[in-house]
Image (cartoon, rainbow, N blue to C red; front, top):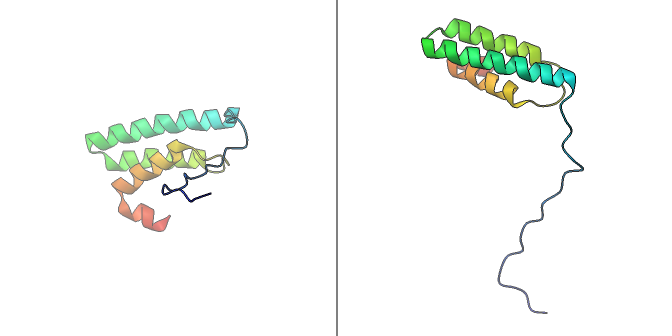
Length: 91
């Protein structure tokens, strides 16, 4: 059989099963993290970087120890790094 001139499409690995729903602890952290993220963004828009960074740190502290990666944790970290670039260097 002759080789095709078209490349073979990549094979994607399927996830092992359906997406696991958040448990109660993860839902609590996600909700509180979203609140602190919204507050941090609001403070930042008002020019109060100290309060914005404080909100980021509180939200990150809540998320510490939760084994499942949460997008809000990454968003809080990004806002903190935008406010204070030395925050990213120490992390």
